[in-house]
Amino acid sequence: MIVSILYLLSPLVSPKPFPLEGSHVLVTGGSSGIGKAVAIEVVKRGANVTLVARNQLKLSDAKDEVEKYLKDSDKQKVVCVSVDLSKDYSAVERAVRQASEMQGPVGMLVNCAGYAICGRFEELSIEDFKVQTEGGRERRGRLDKVGREEPDNFCPTYT
Ligand SMILES: NC(=O)c1ccc[n+]([C@@H]2O[C@H](COP(=O)([O-])OP(=O)(O)OC[C@H]3O[C@@H](n4cnc5c(N)ncnc54)[C@H](OP(=O)(O)O)[C@@H]3O)[C@@H](O)[C@H]2O)c1
Image (cartoon, rainbow, N blue to C red; front, side, top):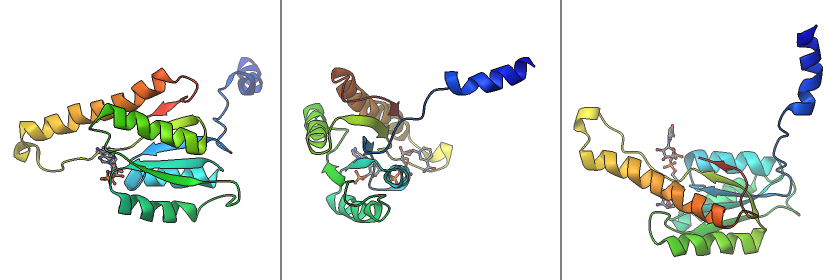
């Protein structure tokens, strides 16, 4: 009985899905791998997407690929911004502002930029571990900081 009541009430208390249709999703590392896959999934659901990475050629190829999955090509846009997230913080800030000017406030930030040095534990140097741990945290921190400074522009952060 209690379980049935809870089941009936659950739609009222469950968090509502984030409305992707027409929103601006900024994906770091969007030119490849997990980031590009996320970009494809959100454009299928009607979002406008900004792909952020360094290599412009890879970005442009990814844009062409992601655009194949647009739900409504008259309304949706995919744009690319080239910036190195591990370098100058003001360049990261500029890139995010540029994206917001083109696509509107960022509704969802997806942090996928990064890389992994793969190898046997005993063959990796301490420097390899440092680059992967500290570097990754710093990249995510830079974008999360821009988000905190502009609370209206950034909502959920997925890393
Ligand atoms: N694939 C997996 O199974 C897996 C599992 C767990 C965790 N991860 C982690 O998830 C992250 C993404 O993995 P992935 O497989 O999608 O990697 P990936 O295919 O190599 O994609 C990495 C993306 O990040 C961009 N990027 C790298 N460094 C950047 C920087 N400094 N500034 C801006 N963009 C940068 C790359 O583009 P540019 O090089 O052009 O900048 C690329 O778009 C990595 O950190 C990886 O370690 C992956």
